[in-house]
Length: 148
Image 1: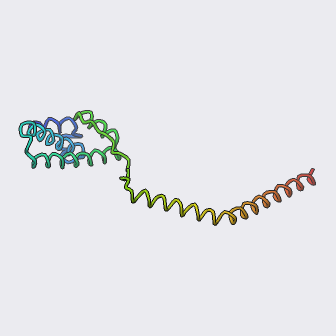
Image 2: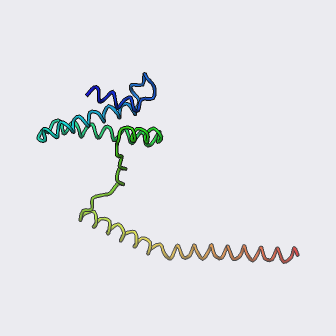
Image 3: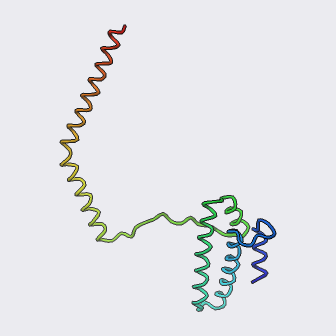
């Protein structure tokens, strides 16, 4: 494992004394994950190591997300050197339940009723704005007609 870790770290290391950068941490976690994968091939019922592998994968995913956000060039280089296939996290999607659908429909209905109640007021305001715009145009036309 130490040899595997050293080989992966050498690929992404920034300088000879770089031991803690995000790239190096990712390489160390990748070595651990690959070791766990090999172990789990031989011992498929080992739940403890499966859990440790999943935890290491989550940690690596967080580090890669940070690298991708902050230093994209380093992120691309790290993924290429370590042979990591990075998949974007899915967009947030809410689980649709019957209760949520009913609540959403009720909110939409309330919103539409409120709009119906405010419609005469909005119409009145729109007509006022149109009248002001017409008056401004007429005034501008009169001032241009007298200026000529």
